[in-house]
Image (cartoon, rainbow, N blue to C red; front, top):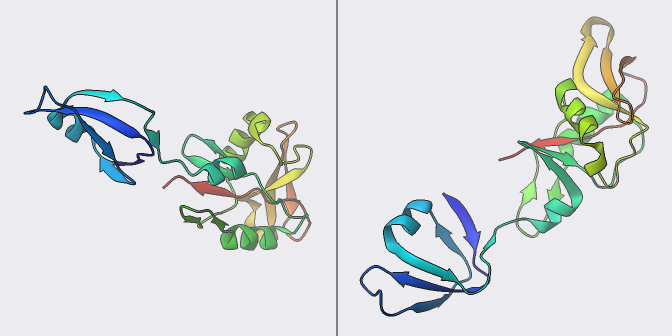
Length: 170
């Protein structure tokens, strides 16, 4: 079931009252495709039905498939441990909800960010970004990626690079 906000007037013809039309003004309604198929014979949208989108989220992040990448207030460089903590503690508060449960991306997700780097507004591509994946855990070496070239390397966890946090789509 998808949630929709109707910020418009809808003209809908219901079964049983095909000759009359009812105009509805609604703040919020939950509509399922089954409801539409079962109850509505014809619907004429007077103005557009706006699917609930968090515009603040859209302005401050980059969504790719089932991932949401941070694209606001990138911090200065930090070591891998601090980068993990930074992402773990990151929250994006919007008027619709609070987005928490951010994390450092894995190598595949960083590669996705690299392939879509032109979609980012505030990310600085010529920096190295931390991966959550460890290269040699026993000696605290972890993967990093250069988002302007896609080049990968490894670095000591106490060294400093940049976090790029990712959030899984709910």
